[in-house]
Length: 124
Image (cartoon, rainbow, N blue to C red; front, side, top):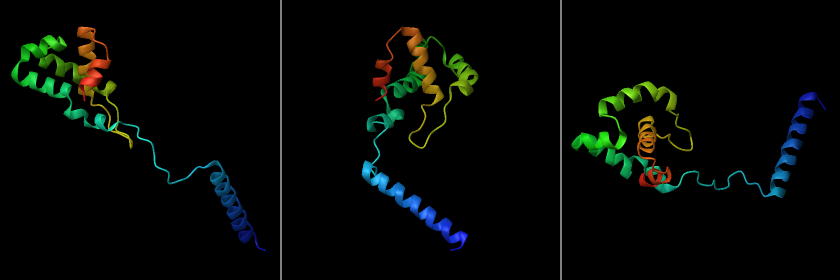
């Protein structure tokens, strides 16, 4: 036997061994993946909180300022300064929460002391 044939047979033996081990442990390559993101969370941009901020900004700037403790100009100046530090990249599994939303949630928490769970659920 030449060396090339021996290498191919050795590689085939390793592949068969790994395949048998996977079958014994119940691991299946094409198994259904578990869901990392709940379906209702994929609609983040349609949530109450995002709609609230956009509507307040358009119709009632004073209430927007009372809610976040910043005017819209101050908010966007702050966002421009912190965005590179708080922005995340989208992954294969899910899209990242936009820096604007992250900052709004943080400012609302700092301004009101409201628990994080409430803004989280209100994004639904």
